[in-house]
Length: 173
Picture (cartoon, rainbow, N blue to C red):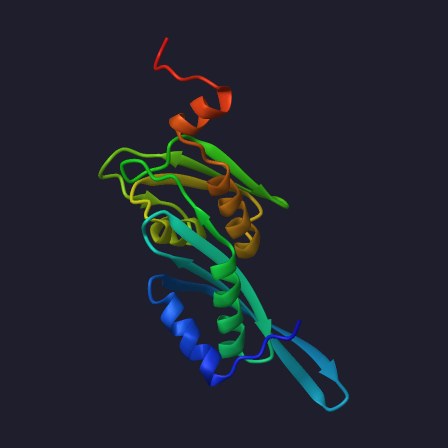
């Protein structure tokens, strides 16, 4: 499937993404040497969020940076997840894992702020989380850390969801 990025598609994409705030975390440049010289390719990691519990992440690759960023935004829109945010924080501790990266996410009290590295902070802020503690464990590769944070956020459950899964109807016993 070849992605084409013409003006009409770009205008439609702008209308769709107006509800989301975007943050480009990094652009990676790779090169391959040919007989005539080097050819560069770029990979962009972009986070989209509405600061209201919805957040998405995408990695786009292309021969030019702007095209890579557009692809990443398009992929991020498709990979949106809902994050349960309670009083500005997450419901419980969780460790997200991807490859050799692990990220510990802990709820924090009001007024604490987001105490985290660059990648977890960006994702948490765009998800609408205002109080959070986190620690990156293992590899600190930005792509793997981003996937690990998303793994953690995807596996969060509220107390109501857990009660429903267990089949309980009442309160504390």
